[in-house]
Structures are given as structure tokens and as C-alpha cells.
Amino acid sequence: MNHEEKALTYFSNNFNCAQAVFASFAPDFGIDEELALKLATELGGGARCGQLCGAVSGALMVLGLKYGNSHSGDKEEISKAISVAVEFNKRFCERNNSVVCKELLGYDLSIPEQNKKIREKNLFTSICPKMVEDATEIVEQLLTETDNQ
Image (cartoon, rainbow, N blue to C red; front, top):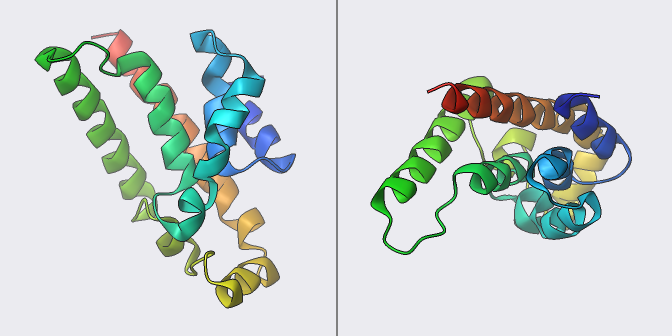
């Protein structure tokens, strides 16, 4: 099963978008999938307030595992981490026009009346899987491209 299939399987099994993306890559970095699911729990639904899309948050966490800064003051490391994140966000926005959950869904899930609309219109099943798929695909592209540089 590839990363996209794995992420979509997680999402279809009631894990949120951040969990789905992050956990699908976790074993590649030596992280237990159960731990990955726990780490990303609070990032779904734009950190539960409709902000940064959870699929984007999960993807950025994956990219952080590969390119994140872990040495204080290492300007090359910091520069690489920033450039990869900027490129991810650019590509995601090219496909979806935003990285903001409430803009992608057209409703703010942190507002009870709007959350009800999201559920009535099945937006979690009609819109979010595409966000999970796009985020996962872009991460795979970036991991491949930057490994080949």
C-alpha cells in the first residue's frame, strides 16, 4: 500500500486529516504509527478551530522529520526546512487555493451551526479526502525531488 492509499485508509477509518497524512509516513522515519496518530490528533480540523488544514499540518510534520532544524543556529538546516515548507504550501495552494481549513470547507467547523452544515453537506467526505490525497502526494514529490538534488 502506498502513502496515499494508506492515508486515505486512515481517514476513512475515522482518523482526522492530520493523523492520516502523518501516520502514513511515520514508519519511514522510525516512528510507531500509534504514536504518530496520537501526535497529530489535535491538528485535525485546522487545530480544531478551522485554521491551517490538518492535512497540511500532518504533511509539514512529515517534512519536518526529514528536513527539520535540530541544531541551534544551523542556518543551512533552517533555510532548507523553510524552503521545503514554502514549496509545499505553494503547491498545495496551487491545487486548492488555500491552506486554511475553513476556506477549503467553506464553513468554520469551530462554530456549532457551521459544523452542523459541514456534516449535513458531507463535506468531510467530499472535500477532505482530496486534501489528504493532495498533501500526501506533494510530500512524496518533495521527498523524492530533494533526495535527488
